[in-house]
View (cartoon, rainbow, N blue to C red):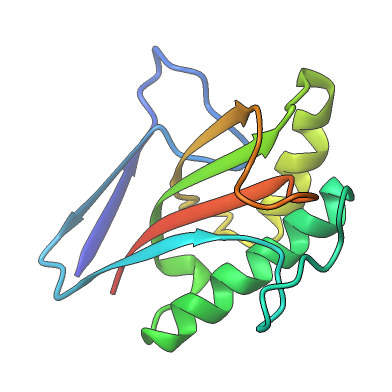
Length: 132
C-alpha cells in the first residue's frame, strides 16, 4: 500500500494535518465511529475539561484502531467535533493531536465547532478512517 500526501503550494500548510491524502493499493479501509472520552461503562471521564477529553478521546480512537490491527499512523482522514469551539483554543488542540498523529504524513483533518454532543459534559468527539 502506498500513501501520498500532497499539500498544494497554493493552500495553507498545516502543522498537524495534510490538505490531501491518497491511498493506492490499499488492502483495507477501517472506519472508526465517533469516539468520546468515556469509560467502558459509558461514563464521561472528564466532564467539562477540553484538554483532558481531547487526550482521552484520542486514546479511545487509538484503542479502536488497534482492535482492527491499525495504528494512529494509519489514519488518512479525521473529523474532530468540539462543543463551543473558540479560535483561541485551536493552537492547544493542534498541539495535543499532533502528539498522536504522524508528523511526516498527518491525516487530512476537519475541525468543527458544534453546539452540543450526545451526553452532558462531553466536549469532544473524533471519528477517523485508516488505510491498513
